[in-house]
Length: 521
Image (cartoon, rainbow, N blue to C red; front, side, top):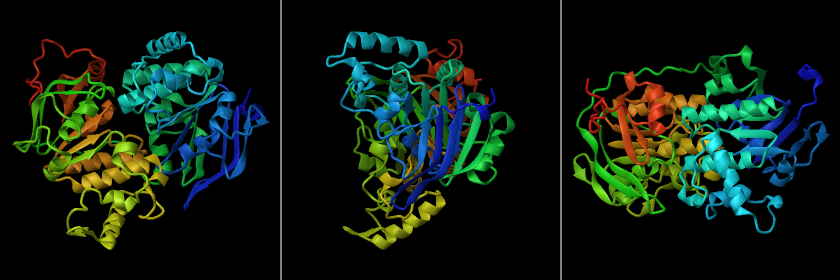
């Protein structure tokens, strides 16, 4: 039966949603059919997540109607959407930090009874974890998990609740290619069963692989709606950002200088007191981008925090430009010229109740021209903020707008602008393009290469193998706190890197010079 004759499982009619100073969605129409995957594309701040938050009951629309399976639906809360068979994996996680993984998965489920059978829940979650390769400690508290592990909990929660209509907001952003393939199998299986999905992503290959139709939002309005088979990644990128996007970056051959960062047998513990880093040794040189590949939760966060003074080493040493900064305070590291783009932008990277301008000033407020002595200069801060907002295309009503009112991607842009602007020697970038649209991602990658060409050292942590190969000069792979191997990015094999990310050691017969990050020829 043709779609024109089918009743959509989801139909949103003329949905409008506004926030202070921002029209997030304006008269948006959306239809989703049984057994269909709809890709939802748009720049950061285009209104994608807001529209889906309306559908899943987190927001109520100012105007418009929603129909589920042909019947008008009043969705006033997430419980209403769950009752209708709608489940969403959010980009900004909806988890309770103080509760365990298992407790979060069953939280709010009435059918669990007053005293849930946790043994049964544990067995069911273990089965799902194994089936879909979503490994996570079921007894760990959420605050003890990395961002990637928290993402896996969100996916498990959706699978456990047997949702019929899936809303997936950047679900593969923290997965290995192998895990992404497993997730694609889940989506295709559910689609074959007549279930449906709306897939928010910035990865064009995922749009072409997963979706049947594509809807593009620009500034809160529908810019285009078309069949996936009738379009291309380049055309979609142009529809999103209104210009041609370069899919290949020009990068000069790197000419490394002396070491700007040196780690020697670094060991550290995670938040649970368990070993997170195990004898990690490598160097980042001036004019070099060293990429760290690995599935989230294998020591990447702890590595970045030991370098930037946020976590104590139990043994080993860290040197910045030959100066020992082992277990130094964060301010000492900042004064040494180190900038840090953290993986958790919401709780670590930005302060939601402060303005965009104040967040942008956080690294340089101690000195001229933003202050004189102990006195801040508001006009100078405002002027600096306006320049950075324009340079990094941060979509904000004004510099005085509180950061919490921005989209996730624009919060990330705010952090990027602040840290790149303050970097003097070493930039530690942890998933800097996560949650950014294709145009912003292109800009971030260019910025990293530009910092490298200026003679700075860049430690670039990512789970996107293609991104690492495109941007980095040298790629190190981490698994369970150890360096599994090292390859020059120019000759890297994505499949071998993916295997190392999954714990398969580099070929034993290939000696690796970990300190220099290359395989001798």
